[in-house]
Image 1 (cartoon, helix red, strand yellow):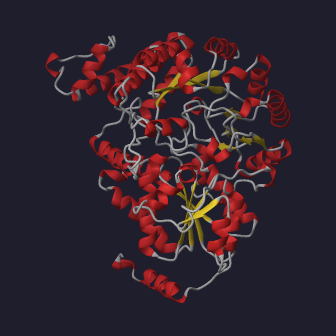
Image 2: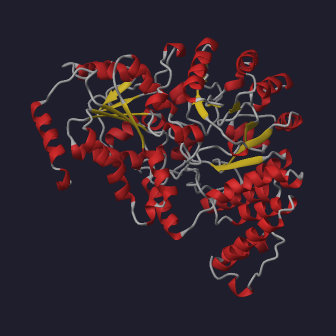
Image 3: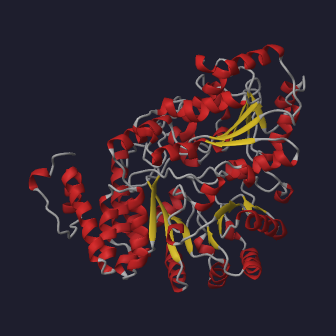
Length: 598
């Protein structure tokens, strides 16, 4: 305990001894978003920042998004008269990352300054932590330790994808300390739990509850995830109590996505119009929280919610987080018509989880664009027919995707595509097949991700079954999101890393569509955004140089060329990359540098 803060711990001790009871309306409740990555990755990133190393094609995406799930929970609690506060620790880490905080500080300092001190100042009775995937397990464990060190009586409640899928693992692990885990969609369950915490028979009630687990009952009975039957019964997300809301809305922390960077004065909000996905993709675990059955908000609910966002926060961009937004053609058209009739051209609309490309028709695309869709991401995942059918089990018809992308281009919609490499059972040739298909699609940007086996997914179970992941590795330290952690008979983790890096360079830089088609203004915007976030990225600088030359901004182009020269002088890796990819640059490639670093 910090002796400089002895007053607050003394109050806490008195409270613990007296076992003061409060009703649910009086309890101090904190809902917290954990850092989305492991302690290993957080430490690694701090080390990279201090060394000045950053690379878009190898880096994970640290940018914070609006914590929509937490906002739904908070809205439901407030609707019941229960006050609540929100802390987004992932955003705090990102803010420290871009502000220079970590140049003289470490991870211990971060948790002290942004978590422990906040707990001491506020003396919460209940702390709920949302954990997205298994890669955040060690960060959540660290958070629960800080909470428990301050108070033995504070109730710790976990929820989210990872706790829902691995509740037994969590309760067995000595490094993580929690009292309850809520399985699946938790809005109604959290209200019930908070209202009943003081019941003397709460242990028995939880044991009998199908969707809530505690440390006493987790091994007694198999429990399953909850889904909310009527989404319209939920309260609207509690945007108004989110700290730093303006920074989420405006993207001033660079929280905007690639497509949003093409537009100025964006004021965005995130929302669900539906939950659930009927597909059975082997890499996905979303259905273990939101179910296979798709449930919808009514248009009346959605327009009321959108009106509130516009009137209170002047929103002009809607980020729709549905897993399967366009599964019903008529619903999509009706909703888009309603948005256009009511708001005209006010909105730009994005779908960060992608749309089901095979369901897109000219009529659907027309109305999506009328409603405000300026960019779109189609979820392809693999360019190999064999992987699609036998490994991914999505069985997407690839020729159909080529047709859809051409339709999107005809509507002048900025188009992106998702790909994943490193599936269990996939070969290196099939990965290259995906890269070639990505080049054939010729979209504006290609996101090539590396498979991370997510708890609850078929790929995760297969990895354990084949001994590719250690089922006893209870801190999930090897599950590094965005990077291969698998060595299989078909490939090594290092080989997948090379495939991903090479694919990104070829698809997004060397064959960048905006550069090839002479749309140099869009290319300038794209690469300026990348250089702003990753100034040491050789290919981002090269792309910007090419765009500036195309725009005949020769003075600016010369300055960028100087930056490229400096990168080559500072690191021979960049010299090697220029030679490997045959970049035509007027820079001095000192032969003595080549091979000086691996």
